[in-house]
Length: 111
Image (cartoon, rainbow, N blue to C red; front, side, top):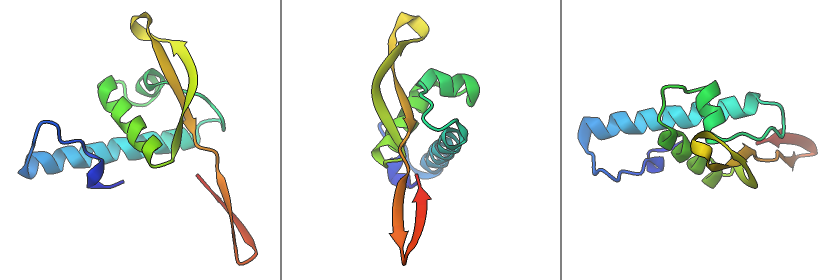
């Protein structure tokens, strides 16, 4: 994860900006690790992440992290949607299919 993953829409600077960047990077890392621990192929919504991992984190922050991880090809946003809170449809994500790379005759798998 990098500091360029922070969307500085409030034009923060200095220590405040550095703190927010660190927090966002920690959220991204925690969500990715959580997704890697799920049963392979499991679909999840932002509300699943909030319920199971980050109950005190605003849903908008979780959606930001999912978008960032999708953009970096760690997660995949599916066309599948389920009804969640507020009786609204929510897309489901999953860990992106692992890729296999052959390196000097050895196969390595990574997400």
